[in-house]
Image 1 (cartoon, one colour):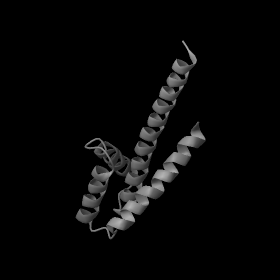
Image 2: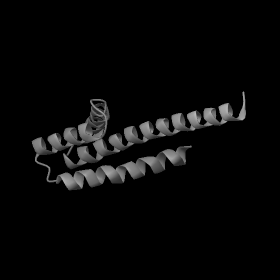
Image 3: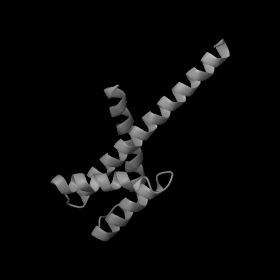
Length: 107
């Protein structure tokens, strides 16, 4: 194996590692978002945990965050929770930063 091959292999490993961390961060963010949303909808305990799992699962519908946003937005609307789209998106961003920090601290 020459230097170029080793370098290429290193880049591939880094890319795979970064993708895995991003996947974990998204899942963690969605769980945190689900727990936050459950609290706003007066859901607690095992029901809140189950709701958070639903939010995590909703992320597998399509690429990006829109599926998660639509899930929570729809549930907020159904429960009469007063959160604007902007507030919800901002919370998603805040929780992504929190999720990334938590995952880094675990490593």
